[in-house]
Length: 368
Image (tube, rainbow, N blue to C red):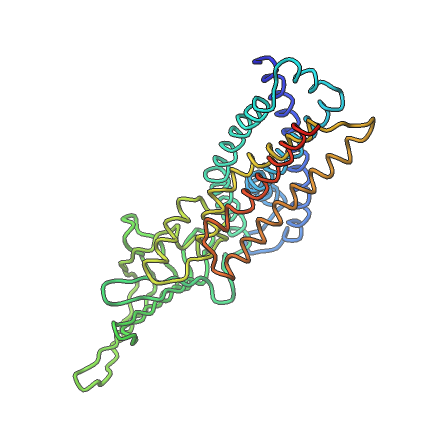
C-alpha cells in the first residue's frame, strides 16, 4: 500500500503544482497589466521595477485564495485519469478499498490544509503589508473611504472616538483626530494631530503638531474651553498597530490571531463585530476547504469514462468547486445581514459540500 500511496501522492502533488503555477502566472500577468496604469505617477516616482515588486509581493495572497480550487482541479484530473486508464480499478483489486482510498486522500488533504494555513496566516499577511508599503511609498497615503478609519476605545468612565485619515509612506498615521466623551455622552476633550506613530511601549501614540481642547463644566453647567498646542504629545491608548491596520486594510488579508484580537477590542468597546467575527471564522475554516475539495474529487475515481470523455467530467468538477466558493461568499454576506451565528455561517458551506460528496461517494461504491 505504501507504493500505491506514494504513487497517488506524487501524481496529485505534480498536478496541483502545475495548475497552481498556471493560475499564478495568469494572475501575475493580469495584476501587472492593471498596475502599469500607475507607472510614472505619484510623488515617489513609481517605476516598472516597483510595479513588478508590488505584483510579486501580492502573489502569496493569490496563492492562499487559489489553493483549494487548484487542489480540486489537480485531484479531479488525477482521479479521472486513473479511472479512465483502469489503473484505479487495478488499485482496487490490489486492496485499495473505499475506506483506504478516502483516508489516503484525507491524509494528503491535511498537508494542503497545513500549507494553506501557513500561507494565509504568516506568509500572505507579511507580503501584503510589504506590497502596501511599496505602493504607499511611491503613490501616496493609504486610506479607507472619504474620512479614513474610525476606531472606538473605552478608558474608565470615558469613551473615545478616534479617526485616522490614512497611513503615510513611512507607516505613520496621518490626520489623527480623537473625541473623548464623559459618562453622560458629552464631549470632554478633543485632540487633533498632523501625524502620529506607535510608541515602542505599545501603550501610547506619539503625536506631532498637536492641538488639544479641554471642555470643563462648572456646577452651574457653564462650559469653559481650554486650548493648548504642543509640538509632540505621548498620548496613552490601548489601540495597537494591528487594530489600526484592521480598520484601514481589508480584514480578509489579516492573520487570524489579529482578527481575534480586533474582535475582542470591538466587543469590549460595544461596537458591532459581526463582520469581523465571520471573517475570523472563515479564516479558521478556509484551510479545511482543501479537505472538502479532495473528498469532492474522490467520486470521480469510481466513474466509467469513454475515450475522450474525461474533459467534461473535469469541467463539471471544477464548476462544483466554483459553486462552493460562491456559496461560501453568499453565506458570508447573508450571515452578516441576517445576524447569523458567525461560526455556523463560515462552516455551513463546507459541511454541505462534504455531505454531498460523501453521499455521492457512497452511492458510487455501493451501487456501481
